Image (spheres, rainbow over the protein chains, first blue to last red):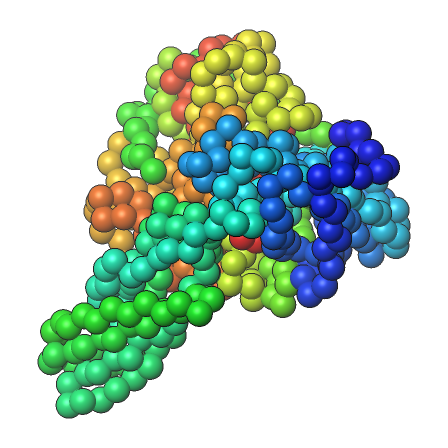
Length: 253
Length: 241
């Protein structure tokens, strides 16, 4: 368990408290009954800055629950290779027993390495050990995203799209490429024109973020659209934090 | 994900493996279900282990030694499987599987320099047997891992012969990236991760699909008699990104 000073680091280091507002994580079934607030943390800090906060873990069940808590690497930007989760994120205690009907506090401390660029990302896992009644462990894992102020670069686009009719339904796939140094979570839709000018709007399924340097295929599907022979046009539009990217494809069935 | 090679044929058993030789080591806590609320949405996960031969509930993932012929058997499916039931309403929810055989509390903990994933030899902790996993939409009790693509039991119309339904089970201490498709069993938006291969990843494309049948295998090609292989760090992890 890391030793956390009771006072703040030196005068050049700023301290901020993060409001543990909207996010909520609650776990409440018989075998792994924890509730956790917050779940996803998104923090903006400058190099050298520090923030501390807490997770509140609750146990609604009728038995004590031992849990192991750990931070771990998840995604590392190439500019930040060499910086590991424990270099900038500390969580403690690493082991706790949540009392029946009670709660416990898990602390975290984020300190931005001076050389960090763009985004740091780590996960905090709450792990229940395996046991005699099951030899499979379960873990609940939540992210901490840290944007390094003054170094961020948002750059992404749609570099390809295609229809996928293999399952007998209308499915449009769009390849989103992230060439910036922050993760993105775009959403959007397809305006589909079919034979005879019939138009439909199909929303893309939202999902996992696209990390920097990666490509992810998003799909939009409407099982109610009949696959009629003819020419189709798909006008794709995706948005994230004020930026819009478009792509158009034409295809025939 | 890479294609797996399996045992060629079943030959007579060399009966020097105890009944528990390939069972996972147990610790001290029952952990079979969880409900998670992430932000505005939820991820509800429960986990049940079942025997492959009769579908009865069990508490161990195990390999029956009678199915392993030392020196002959290569890949062999486990004699129990995992039923995951999930309900996700958070679009960033997902489930992954891996071992953590160098992690805190691992017993036996891998001490070698090679691939630490899978089943660790209790008598020589520098050795481990590689494992594999497969997720499907439906259950099967006629499962085997074939030298060729095993898709006969997979109930997915999109599946093409170039997709491989078993994936290696990996370990973060041996290079597994958290959230990698190698480990992803399912995601909210894509459904179950059915296969991969020449045409790319194959998902069920059923958002928030409830049921996932998770089958495991291990490669006994390098197993030695009178030794036990186990892990207490087979982790099924639900996460938010």
